[in-house]
Structures are given as structure tokens and as C-alpha cells.
Image (cartoon, rainbow, N blue to C red; front, side):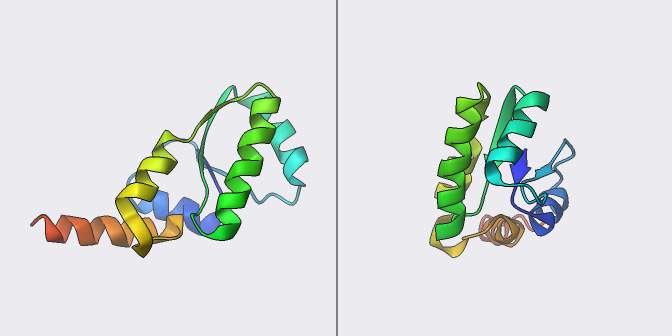
Length: 109
């Protein structure tokens, strides 16, 4: 899974994600980062934010990775975006939104 920064990693960990979560922001250009990722991964789940910067970043990164023959998985990104709606513009907002949805459904665990 590829996210923008450390707070996104922390948010996903808070929700119980245990797999590899990579940060996009590593001091490299986007082209360099995509190239490096393509050498180590054949498939990547992109989870950028849904704010204007994140949307642009998602589009650019997806194109770069696909150019490097990496299978880009953005189905989860699209589903989270639909589920969270306008009340959730960043990955770090997702845990609070999930908790809110659980409370609305009568499950606050």
C-alpha cells in the first residue's frame, strides 16, 4: 500500500492494517519514486488523499507506475472515497469516519 505520509501510515495502522505500507514522500521526485517502486513491486495499492493535491498526485502516480509496468490497484481508494463522502478528504480522516459509521450502525467497537 502506498500513502502520502507518516500520518496516513498511522491512520491505517490504527484501523488494523498490518501489511506493508509505504510512504510516497521519500525525498525523491515522483518519477524517481515510481521508478524505485517499480523495481521492488509488481502491484501497488495507491491510497492518496481526496483533496485536490491528492487527486492530482493519484492520477500522476498511477500513470507513472503503469508506464513502469506496475499493476496499480485503486479500487480500494475509489471505494473509500465513495464510502466517506465529502466528510473525509484525507486518509488520516478515515478512522474517525469509520468510528462514526459504526456508531450510526449501533456498533462502537
